[in-house]
Length: 285
Ligand SMILES: C[S@@+](CC[C@H](N)C(=O)[O-])C[C@H]1O[C@@H](n2cnc3c(N)ncnc32)[C@H](O)[C@@H]1O
Image 1: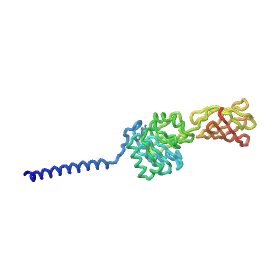
Image 2 (image 1 turned 90 degrees about the vertical axis):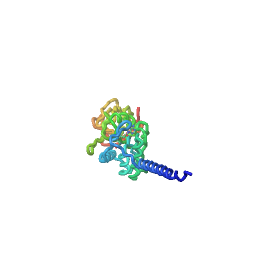
Image 3 (image 1 turned 180 degrees about the horizontal axis):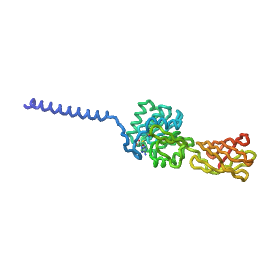
Image 4 (image 1 turned 120 degrees about the vertical axis):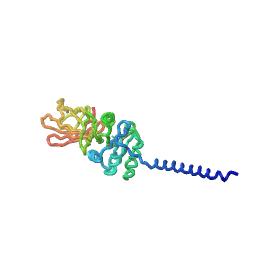
């Protein structure tokens, strides 16, 4: 009978199995416990990750005049600093779009820790595929080429949408405001209404309908006012979001001015001439 002699061998084998299981379990536990930490300049789909400094984030949100009524989208949201600050400081709703799933999860955890996960969320997706058309504020820290790829989409957003970019421009679409914080620079654009074209304008004092001709390059607008066959250049034209204002010379050589709000196919506002202010209306020809 050799059974008793096998006992120590079996005991040793069992101890070995238990020790290995313990080691394996500890290794698994250690792996699960190591939190993901993004590394500065790590690769990203179209651009690497470098975070915007807190001071420039604060400045960017101030430039955009973010409030609790806003829905901010940060395109390429990295560790979530912009979206989380918008939620925490201004009570804004914010969404970050981030291609790296680990970064998106990292930012989600950050929003949780900062107590804003009811307002601030992160989508693991591509900024060129996700829909951010509901945004009232768009922030980004990308690259000049990426800003240019996004430009047509941004210009099609409702007039008044604020776009803030860290570091990079939109080429010939000049910023409405530039500001710095620390060593960083940020640019703000306000999406302008599309006003280019010919407008039939009614309400000019003592005159038949006039023709307003507007040319536009982003927020820069020029044009002429034609009344009774006489064209005058528009002077001091300002377009901000859907608000348009300009002056022109009347037949009596006195200056007249118009301030109006532009909606799809319609322009309505006030006409000032010889000290009197009257309603004016224009429709696209
Ligand atoms: C320079 S970081 C800016 C991060 C953050 N917006 C900030 O200002 O701190 C750019 C981020 O965009 C992400 N990214 C790159 N290409 C992307 C794409 N096509 N769609 C979504 N995210 C992208 C990168 O992973 C990175 O986290």
